[in-house]
Amino acid sequence: MGHSHAHDGRQGHAHLPGGVGDGTILIAVVINLALTGAQILGGYVADSTALIADGVHNLSDALSLVLAFGARRLARRPASPEMSYGWGRAEIVAAFVNYIALIAISVWLGIEALARLVDPPQVAGGLVMALAAFALVVDALTAALVWRAAKESVNIRAAFLHNLADAAVSVAVILGGALIWAFGWQIADPILTLLISAVILWHIGQEIGPVMRMLMLAAPAGVDHAALVRAMAGVEGVAGAHHLHLWQIDERRNALSAHLVLRKGADPAKAVRRVKALLRRDFGIGHATIETEREGEPCGDRDDGQGHHPH
Image (cartoon, rainbow, N blue to C red; front, side, top):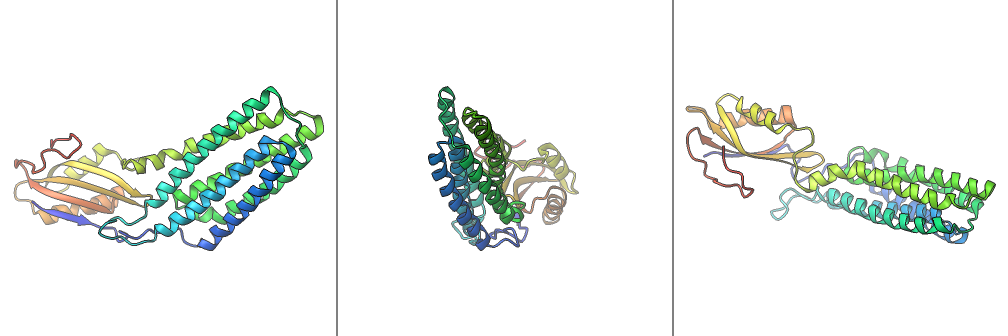
């Protein structure tokens, strides 16, 4: 029985987005913390849950950036015997924690807003507009700071999306402050708070799926399992494949383990090399662990621990 590994040259090294330094992320954190303090204090003074909601959301942005910063640094640590894949998945865990925190915040804000719909308080519309406009500028600046990193990291992208959502929320809060200031429509504040919560939850719903798939070791999205098996079986000297497991190590690395069934007379080393080349070229799988067995021979692994038997 043959046993072989293929590495894509990146194993144990998290390739983080280039061109965006840790200092940039720290600047974004400081800016968001300053904005959070101003909005929450202003929200209490103006008695505006919408402004407090925006401030709490900005606090979650700052904390998400702190978490992203920590995970980014952790992901740079090299692989070790205890952590053979390295620490790249720390960014995925950080993104998941950020999303769960946002869900909790959104639910809390929605409950507060529903209570205020019954008896809307008097809100200082002018102060709300001023602070929301300040928040819009800060959100746009923060998003610009982390935009390049967001394109290559699910962890940074989670924080980036927080800022985009905040920018949209700030526009809504400005509108609500204008309605209160011009027409005295106090109910606009809790209504906007509910809309803010809905927008946050919608964004999470769009982004949390891929993160969950990676945490659950699911196959990369878009990979056809049946087509993959057929392609492997079509390689010269290969009769079939079983015990196939495909998963994402992180955003940039896919891995596979499988048993190849070889035809009589096939060279195991050549067959494995051809399959690895196929996996890398056609399916983007750079890390493959492959065992070989001859056609007609019993498989050494009668059960793979998942209830799957050779076929």
